[in-house]
Length: 203
Picture 1: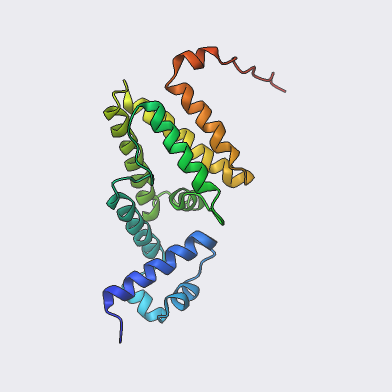
Picture 2: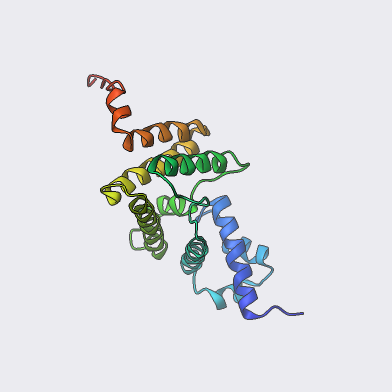
């Protein structure tokens, strides 16, 4: 039975998402995406006027899927700030140790397009990351934390930084290091007890 136009579009989006994550935007070709979707290039271009438009549509669909869930981070974040930190970084450790883990697709694609500031996919990536940070702000506000927006931004930097370093080094232990830093954000007594790192003298 022939696929409907909606089914065809969704199939293209799924295969494009898989190939963009696997190979990156520039290495995943339209021919490859069309073949994986079992459509002709003409059909693909009927649904998406360009490869840039296809990437933007892929990220828009992923953003909608993430926020269709009650738990955008893939884990219920509730309780005290300390419990929220533990849940977040336990999930990051679990996620980053899955086979073929490739980090955040939004981050990777935004970095790949760093020299194209007007690209629509970068705009969507910006909106997605801002929404994730705002979600954290709401969670911390519900937990009764003072200055939730500031703490959410600090926590977000630690999460994103850990993901980047895990990808660079292939070492999930960076999630644990980020978790220790996050605990200090919400435990001033612990932060005061930690030795102050000594900065190396300039070369």
